[in-house]
Image 1 (spheres, protein in one colour):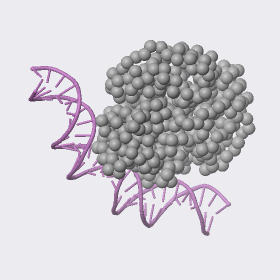
Image 2 (tube, helix red, strand yellow):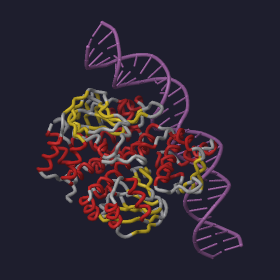
Image 3 (cartoon, rainbow over the protein chains, first blue to last red):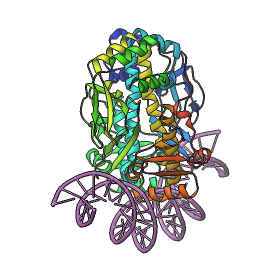
Image 4 (cartoon, rainbow over the protein chains, first blue to last red):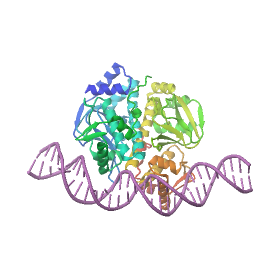
Length: 241
Length: 241
DNA sequence: CGCCATATTGATCGGGGTCAACGGCTGTGG
DNA sequence: CCACAGCCGTTGACCCCGATCAATATGGCG
């Protein structure tokens, strides 16, 4: 539990030991949620924020036609709805893809934390800005990249993010329990076409992706295929202020 | 000058008079920039942030093929690169569409402001979260809405945002100096197709859009055509904390 | 063992891209 | 004052990527 939190805090910025302890202490109860349930629902006004400890979730909107757009994938370590602390009404839902374990942070505690420790407020702000950077990259993908590039790109992104929180397996494979339909809803593609592109990526020896396991055989080849450059994820660099 | 800042501060959240004055005082020099120039460039590390006082600008990325994705339109009152204060390296550029007047806020002053007045930090955070909400809505548009819906949607969004900062004209028209090519780059469409859809919207008596002037003849009709619901812009409601 | 979600493949279709040409407006320089 | 250039808007013709429809595996799980 605290291992994930610690890893994520290290990614978010330079916090002192006291600040890190304060964040851990603020975590309220832990909730277990089944697969394909909502963590939060569009239109509601939550009073606490969810930090994902285990499992996969996604942000999504349902449009008027009934189609779904997945807006982001959320993995362990993601403070997936921290924006509900600042904005009053959610404009989208967050649903689990797999069973999840989440830690709940009541808004009043977050308020205390951020006012007592500006560095924590800054770290949380930073997390939401990285989310925004990912949105921008997805916009570029959905708007201007081909289906082949989009899928290669998102797989690169997921592997990079999973590695950053220590979720790569020893053999270099990843657990990526995302169905082809979900990939399609994330990338603006149909399930059928996702399937065809995955087949092509497999035939080109770039990846193996089945049964929720992703193996990238050729990292550079996949990055080239997806026009992927990880700088937007802001993982390596830290800003000392 | 300060009129725009005041309007925008009022939208961002409940700030005291002292806090508002502090923000105004923090504005450094004012810069005038010609059309089609960069305010900030991808990959750089700015040391000050731009608040747009007049004119239109846009965030964009140039992809490997040389195509452009416009990520957002920025109008008067937008703190268009506040994220450069928190994240070290820009993942995209911001360019002007028209001549612009911008006020510059040095990062150290922003740091002082946000640490002395938590409400200001919160207001800036709020601004970046609203940006993110717009990104999410655009993702849904580009990913799952038809060209016709996308264009209607973005025109509704622009008119709502312009009205919110007092840029609607008395006759209800708007200055929207965005070319069809730029609309296409924002929505993931070709210039040709943007043109055809605009013709259809004109024939349907929903809008007139020429010479940089947008007139919406049927607000509800356009909103229906674009599946537009303005809640994500967070304009009306304010959160009292 | 049977059910339901997911993956896979083929056949066909269509929204929107691409290419090309032309018109209109504006600014600029001779 | 006119000629020309360049950008933007407009329209037609054609094409292709990816959607849709449909049928068939496959496989986990009660």
